[in-house]
Length: 133
Image 1: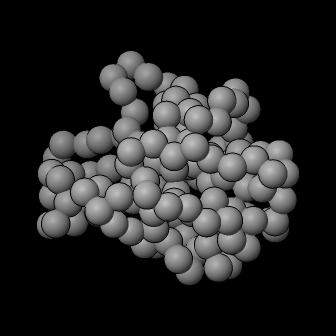
Image 2: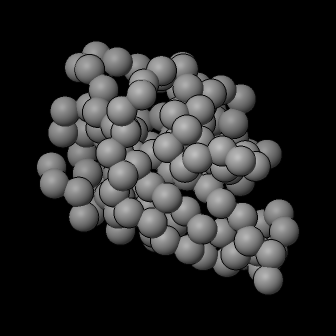
């Protein structure tokens, strides 16, 4: 079975977490910052890159918070593909707002439990619920 590697990043601002809405051509659901790991790219470097590309946030320090794997659904690109995900957490300064790229059309800052309820995929929501407020 073919495999793919991705990263996801939970962004925390005080007691709130960033949730982003994928633009309709990207699925049209609520998610977190996420993306693929390039060939020969380290997990951490991929997370730093994706965070900057999708929100314009430039950071070096990210906290690893877990990993999981899933198989892509029939409606997704390359259905049946096994995806291995490494997850990270980053804290941002009070008042920071993202500058979203073309992949997103909206965002919200929400308390942990509300953010987890809004997320489309169960694994990012489980990781979020496991974080200390």
